[in-house]
Image 1 (cartoon, rainbow, N blue to C red):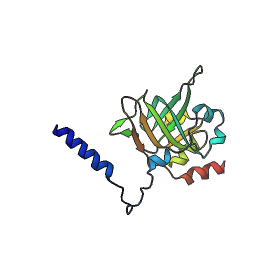
Image 2 (spheres, rainbow, N blue to C red):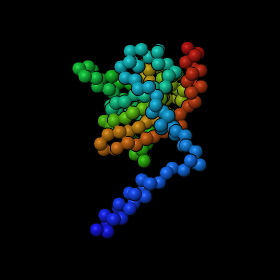
Image 3 (spheres, rainbow, N blue to C red):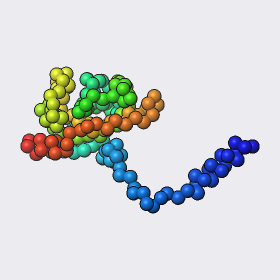
Image 4 (spheres, one colour):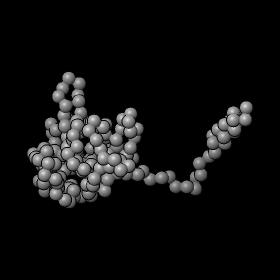
Length: 177
């Protein structure tokens, strides 16, 4: 009987509390702001990369391959079509609670498309790419990640905000082309 009374009293107290109007509303964090970027299908980016150059976009899919500690390939599997793959590059090593990203994990990635090929991506990151990563994006668009959200039954939701390059670096390079 007592646990029920304690639970009811606690629920009443929680429901009767009003938020303080003296406290300013929190500003959205990097994860919340980045996840409001428009969601785009990988196939659309691959079919017309020029229209997404310099744009912030959000993609979703499954990690098909891990290229390095800072790069991986995201695949989407449209119904009755071959999988479409986009290389994602991060400005720092990708780890969730000290554990690296693995193949077959579901992710939602927000970032910018600097332009096709390795040179625009390297310019946006401010450092050279690993050889295997540079080869994977030769003459193809890539996504420079700002946030990565790992999803799925095994992980729940796990967010990773990255120290991404400034938007100016990507915009300047896109305008120079």
